[in-house]
View 1 (spheres, one colour):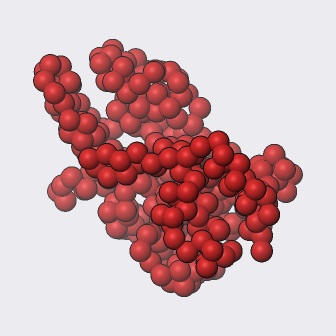
View 2: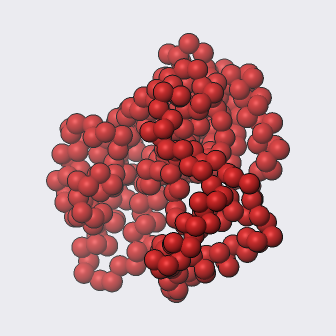
View 3: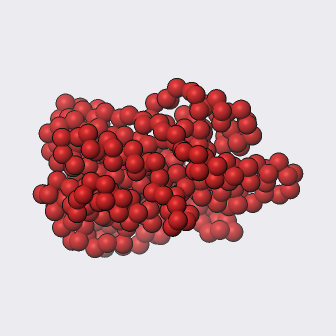
Length: 313
């Protein structure tokens, strides 16, 4: 048997190949951890095990021999001309006074920790960043008394300008989806909204996606769970609170950009001007060497507010 892979890159590493091989030969590739221990280098830490890459040059060669007879990969370059174009844009928006104040308070708390000279545990800083990200995606994640957020307001305004209200909205935070859905239904006066996320049965997901396409409604999905779904009837996708790994966002984008698609896919990333999230993407772009560098540079926040859009991120 052969599994045909698309041009969407493998996001995390060699360990992801086990699922494909298990589907081909469940008996031979019955154990995930046996596969990982055979082909992956594992580092044991106090937090568990980290898979860091290939185990050795020899193990990589052995795996390549296996894949040569079981998989065929068509790259994006090979698919050019077979799929409609994809247009990616960034919608840079202001946070608003209340959200800006809360965001800056989190920021200052984080800076106090970094400037204290004391030992700072990484999860403490990451928790601050997580709260800021949640605030930007949907303030109600922090407090029910707060609004839905300028991000979803911007998305709804964009959908209203489209020929119909057929769209896909992706986010990193599953718990934000009910709030985002509630706002969309109220403002667009529609009940043709659909939700998919991790933990759902495959048949249920299939039925939901089929109805979504049939009714040309609006679907909400976590970015990571979108993988493997086809929204080829939809031309407008929005990413609110992207993942920090570009490949994960790209695979969500490509739910709209299929070989069966007829129209150009327009993908809009919602970015809050001057936010910590926007600055971290500067690291992804290579503008800074590490996250700590931009966190320490107090002037960056002000400069980025008036800066130019830097590609997708």
